[in-house]
Image 1 (tube, rainbow, N blue to C red):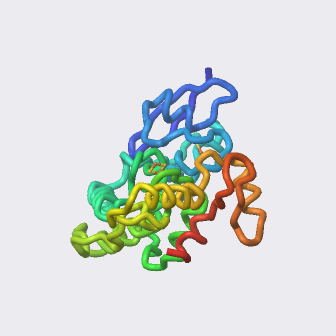
Image 2: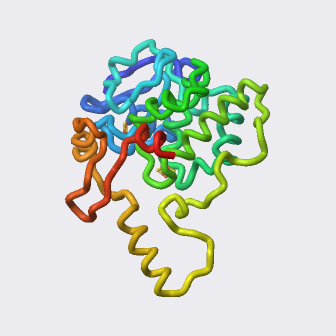
Length: 238
Ligand code: FES
Ligand code: FES
């Protein structure tokens, strides 16, 4: 067992690690910081484990523990109450969360964008989210929430409005509606929606393939015919 010392959320800590461990394991298993999620470690492709290292967003699943000696690490728990409150209120208002697994990493990304005052630029927010995977909310509402959080932070922590930016329900973006329909109409709609819904089982290698294509879209050849879009493409469409 070896040891490292570094600052975690402003306090000096010491942790032990075994050879071959990555820094995310040290945070979660040795120090009990479970806000940083393990979605794909050590691939570094989902963004769920994002933390601040020396003031910059970075992926602990790609760092070796020995590289972290003397560094400053900030997780969601280490953000200021005011900033965390603005981001939380904005995600609730805009409907930017469902299961929440991806959210700690996205909160760190949002905090970094807010500190750099880049949340007014929707394209910049979408681009910054390209390294994050959310499989339930859809990126449009997350981008809304980050922009609203930026406005709330500039407004002393008060939300700039009481209403979300978009009022439709989730399925409505894919052609569902709240109008009462017959059973056969509902079945036809469900078939269309099933085809329009992005595949939920695409893998990191499929995503890398999508990145290499100039269109930044990927048509699933496995379980369905759906296309997966990168967040910046989605944002332009919404
Ligand atoms: S667990 Fe680190 S990027 Fe997925
Ligand atoms: S809210 Fe479930 S993965 Fe993003």
